[in-house]
Image (cartoon, rainbow, N blue to C red; front, side, top):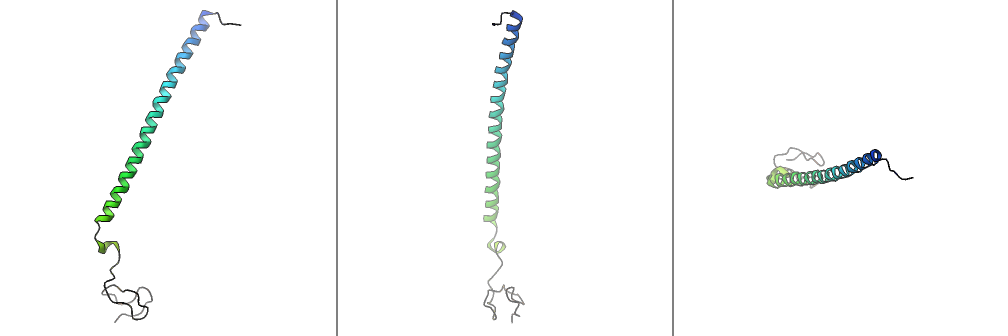
Length: 94
């Protein structure tokens, strides 16, 4: 049957109270975890923006090898100024 023992009813009331506290703590934990994920996403976006800003700030010469020289007489590929040999075919540059 029914629970009529006052001591047992008291224990059940305490258990219900603990269950409510656990639920409240679980909700608080979920909020904190969501905040952590938001902070991680913001930090990653900030890191990516900084990376892009650094790449944009680099001089053009640092981004790609210089090709303002002559064309290779053998294969026609651009050869950096001052190069003695073509990096593409190995031909000697005059």
